Image 1 (tube, rainbow, N blue to C red):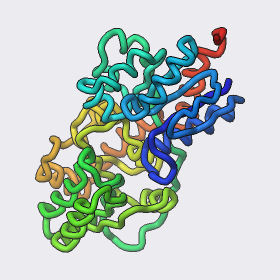
Image 2: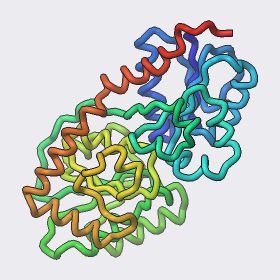
Image 3: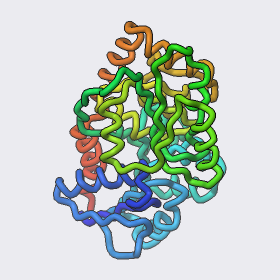
Image 4: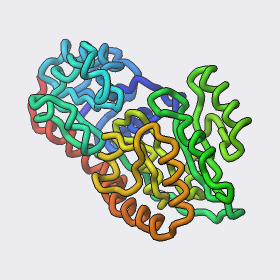
Length: 320
């Protein structure tokens, strides 16, 4: 099949949507499909469209549905789609109606949809290949935060939590990600100057991020909203346990009973969990066990099978 895959962010952004698009393109090409990736559909003939982001990709979604009303249209819902836009934005809502299939990236995503939309929804967990562990060069307890600095990520919550860690703590917070505004950059630099445990390293290549994962002891995902965080997949692939805000997008990735949640925007409780992970070997082992069990949902083999099955639902149909 000729497939056009639309993602609103290009490779230069190095965000979660782009990594999803890149992986899915590889899976589908390996299955024999012809795949073109674009930030906006240029009108070239295609048998099927996959669009990431109901609101941001609306122009392409609407144009494809208008040109080819009977050809399959798959819309992948992001965190801002699920937990904001589809409840208030007309373009995002129209995208739900136009899609033949909707995709959510974690088990709780379907809870946000009306019954008529939930009925045509599939859950596809994202994935990451195994990340081998590397030897640490000191006795620091490395707490990793990975994500661009924007409001949806609550990016400075771990920095604030570092101020409440015990004086004897070996924890060092390393934050990887580009500031998406000068105000965010200024805040990060101020946090570095005031909080000795916090280190903002700015934008990093994917290879550098993987290197940090290979030596990390803990990942914190502090987001206000998430569609299904890629960084959780990467942490699990590296054998790094996760502390996460108790939002649906994180619970849908890690499970209802995961012991590593803290109340959203509560840096004191976050600090307590970081300290417990550092000092309570039983708690740390419990986090590792739970993450290992969830890892089975997020392997490249399983994601590839899910994506190919998603497209395969339409392969036997006669396209007009």
